[in-house]
Amino acid sequence: MLDPQLAKDHIGTRLHILRRRCGLSIRQVSERSGVSVAMLSYVERGVNSISLVTLEKVLMALGTTLAEFFTDRESPGSGPVFAREQMRTVSDPDRTYTMLLSNRPGVQLEMLDEHIRPAKRKPAFSKLKSDVAGYVLSGSLILEVKGVGKKALRTGDAFYLVKGSLHRGYALEGQEVRLITAAYPASY
Image (cartoon, rainbow, N blue to C red; front, top):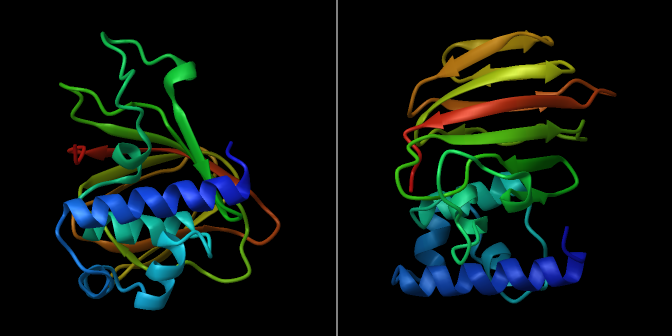
């Protein structure tokens, strides 16, 4: 894991470059992502850090994903094996994601190992870019889907959400949740 200040600077710089490559102003990214202009500016300059949930929204507005943003393009690997040394892990105080399947040609599925820690407040709802399936390895996950309701999933439970669903998932107070999620199609 990166030093916190280095991570802030690195992510901010990469977001700035990506935004410029997309030909978008901070205001346009703000409108598309729902993240304030001030927050985006602070993150790009390395003044503030950004949560993974908020980073996902910004990256979606820029037409990419966490997996693609954090994949090392110089050594994508090849063949059917994804060695753990090539997997990227990113975290914030509330979540840790390990990208199990890296961004490489021919891979049509995105898979994450997620650790969700209890947070003081619930995350905002996110809109899915792909169909997503998940399997709870440990803990209890609260899954809320707009228009469907809230459900507590226990160890061994699974879920499937269709593209476009507004959802959020979070841990019960005092419990960490670990789950595997897969998105199809991957947005590479």
